[in-house]
Structures are given as C-alpha cells and as structure tokens.
Length: 105
Image 1 (cartoon, rainbow, N blue to C red):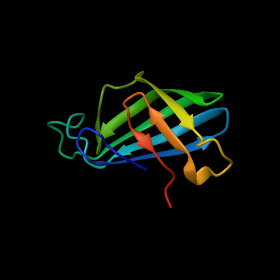
Image 2 (cartoon, one colour; image 1 turned 135 degrees about the vertical axis):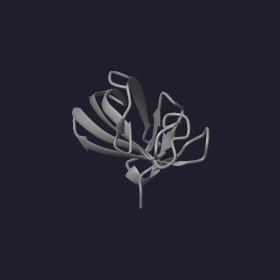
Image 3 (cartoon, rainbow, N blue to C red; image 1 turned 45 degrees about the vertical axis):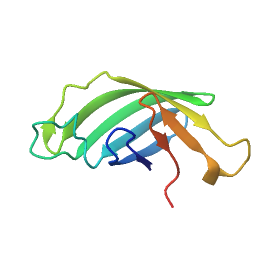
Image 4 (cartoon, one colour; image 1 turned 90 degrees about the vertical axis):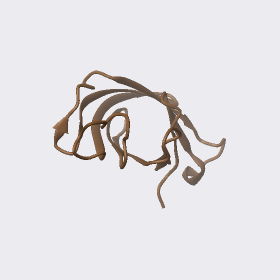
C-alpha cells in the first residue's frame, strides 16, 4: 500500500511470482491518468523480472474503470529496501514514480 505523493490518493500493488512477477497496480483516484474518464479508479497489469533488489516491469494493459488507456509498454522500475534486517514488515518498495509501498496489515 502507498499514498500517491502527487495527489494523496490510495495506491496498491499486489505482487505475485518469484523471479517473474505480475503486479496488479491500482490508484483509487488517478486524477491525471483518468482525466476525462467516467471514473478515476485506475487499474493496470504489469509483468516483470526480479534482479537482486530491483524489479523491472512493463505495463501490459491499463484503464480507468472499463475505459482502456494507451499505457501498454510503459516501463516501471521498482527497488526494495529491506531495512537491513529479516523483518518483512520493515520493507519499503519504491518505484520510478517515487511512490513508496509498505506491506498491508
């Protein structure tokens, strides 16, 4: 979970996989990306590869509600800071947009 540093909306990134990943990326009020759409609820699917503490992802589809957006191929880099310990609750995942994600409770 994260808070969008630009507009304060709620962000989510549900990640599955190990070395090859899928991310369901959500923004409950994507004011810029969904400008002019019937809803500002943004959802995207990203496919990626993990290399050490970094994950390289590419957006395969995106939309605001049922309205598709032309973000196919957008590359997003994610970096993991594990806090220097073995406690996953301290992990912070940051993407190339500057969004900082922590684990949901």
